[in-house]
Image (cartoon, rainbow over all chains, first blue to last red; front, side, top):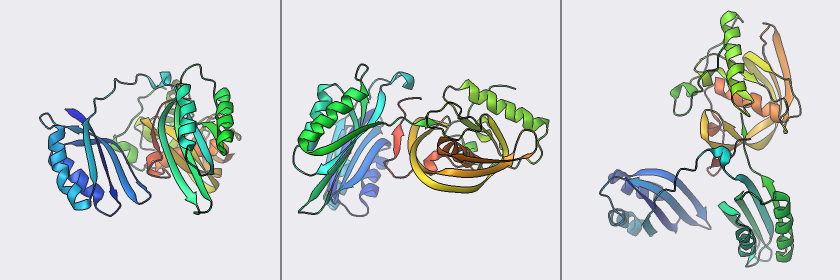
Length: 181
Length: 166
């Protein structure tokens, strides 16, 4: 079995998920992790699928060509070898949620992400929304990050707050670990 | 008295509504002991419902003693045939479950609840709880009706791969 990372993007309308996943079903592919959402009217799909032996990226591209043409989607397929098993979750890095919001302008994501990258903080999930009015756009960003051992969350929050102030936005950090019931 | 194996998804038993216990007899007390033993054997576990150990009866154990998010704390508590009398002030929090070991999810739960059930001494018990203890009670009550936190998550993007046990 071979894993492939697939993306498909196009103007939102009913039937996109059904059409794209139909192409996978025809080839006996199993959908594993996926994330799909609407971004300003564009429906964006990201999937990792497990394909049976003998099914290659070219086969999937060919199978997706029909739905892509019908629905005006841009589709990509590339091999995606799975990472080694993560091991015991107890050993995993702590998970934190970062919220950033304020008046919109270019450079907010880059500024915050660069600070995180410089400290080897891994972004594992991120979503942004631009809201407000044309005169007064508001930008919101929520990131989930994992802190490497040795990064103190209080120090990181202070650094993030300083950077956020430079960018004219507000940034806060809070733990996002779950309570096991 | 024994530590029992905990059922996990996709075991269909977890989706089955449980039956009333009725009378607190020796079997019910043995179930209570198993729930407590199994809960105690899992680090950071604050609650366990009978269906999770393969028993289709309306019973659960909780204990939020020492949990940093707890305010009310009834201590070690086993309830038979519990029912929710009232639930107010929903708040979203991230939950995990021993029966869904690889995922967590954001779930809105009432933070002030009143639950009535039968205690291990066979008498009626009314528990008023808030904050984390309220969440724990509601999570366990759901198990007795065959509901898991996945049935309650707030949105399509509110389910996460589990990373940390706390």
